[in-house]
Image (cartoon, rainbow, N blue to C red; front, side, top):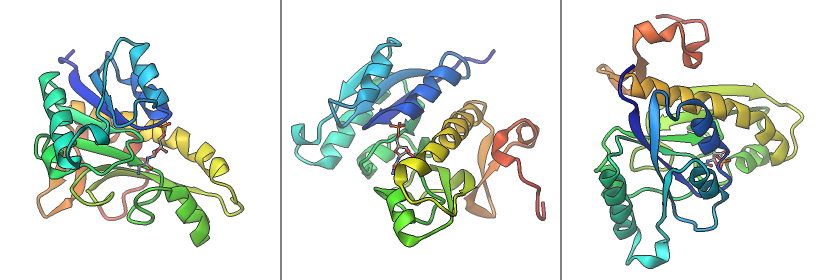
Length: 221
Ligand code: GAR
């Protein structure tokens, strides 16, 4: 088997997506070599420690500004040999000081069908808007707010949903499927951009049959 891809995960909260990665791709296609957080009390950190993954906290208040914090975090991850960074419930924007160190190699999971409802409290935003279809997006990260090229999306119809907890119960399993699959495909070198439209992420043809990310019918090839 090919050498596992050295992977870092950034977290701010509970860490169920980190757990999905630890349980499904860690030690296989990818090796989670570092978990970083902006929040010392993020329960996700304990999930990493319990699997002997190196952790480090980069509180915003310890640095002059966000770019200085992000530069320090990027430097630590580069020291660990990281080649892909996954944002799994990381609740801050990353500045160019970070993104420039990992070009085309930062992936985020977001609990809405982007470009609808970017930013914080996406499910609450969707409920307030009154939508009947909710969903999840996995995407490459650029300098904007949840605005990078989409890798995969999955929708769920919940016309009677009233509470964010209920919606999240439906979205979590989708996240825990789509995010590890995106990491697997990245590790295999199967993700690329359509030269005709770099916003479109392509999956290598030999991978498309086996992946859950392209399970719908092709409309026009
Ligand atoms: C997930 O639902 C993720 O999509 C969301 O935070 C949650 C983290 O859960 N991310 C965002 O809203 C980013 N804008 P977890 O800590 O259990 O993985």
